[in-house]
Structure formats: C-alpha cells, structure tokens
Length: 155
Ligand code: SF4
Image (cartoon, rainbow, N blue to C red):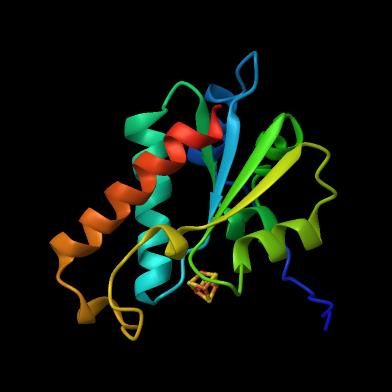
C-alpha cells in the first residue's frame, strides 16, 4: 500500500535545529541515526537506544535526525541524511515506521542499515504499553541494545 500525504507548509523554521544541523555537518560526515518514536514500549526503547548511542556512546561518529521533522519539513534535517555516507534506522518493531517514511520521502544515496531494536531486547514480548515494564528495566533493555548497536555500526 502507498499513500500520498499533503502537509500544511510551515511558515518559518527552527533556529535551534538549524544550529544543530550546522554543528553536526562535520567532515567526514557523521553516521545519521534515525529512530522511530512510537507510543508503545518498543517505540520508547528505540528512542532511548538512539539517544544512548548518539549522545553517550558514539557522539563523535553519529548524529541523530528527527524522522518526523525530515518528512514534515520546516527545517532541513534531510541535509544530515544527504551528506551522510551511512544511515542507520532504529525501528522499534517490524512496522519499521521511521525507515519506511523517510525512505519514502527521500532518495537516500548512502548505505542504509535498518535495525529492529526489539530484536535486541529480551523482555516479555506480550507486553505493549510503556507502563507494563518498570522504567529501570526499559532503560536496561535500551542500554543493552545500544551497546550492541554501537559496536556494530562502526565496524
Ligand atoms: S516501528 Fe513500531 S514501535 Fe516504532 S513507531 Fe512504528 S509501530 Fe511504533
């Protein structure tokens, strides 16, 4: 199935995001990390994993890109994707929302890797809501997945 989506044009821009894009437009380019941000446990873990990898484990090598902002427009997040040699999507589940949306919106020339963070977690897979697992266990799952991803995406 495919859909055509029409967006209301954003009348301005986000100067904070513009500064972030400029700051992280390094030479050589950083790996663009794009995560889904679903409301469920798997989306929450994917978001935490991306933040751990980007801000703590590989801050010099990766830059997080907001997939919603990339698709909706308003500030040129896609610049970080277009200049990257590698783009890594961290999707929480097999629906792969971030990778399907961004790859539908952009013709990505870089090497693309799609990682399902749920496959790196070992909690009870019948759970769905973020309230169904203690916060410290969510964080522990995210830390474990992030460590595995950080050691894999730069090799
Ligand atoms: S990939 Fe799964 S967890 Fe992530 S936003 Fe989509 S449905 Fe939610």
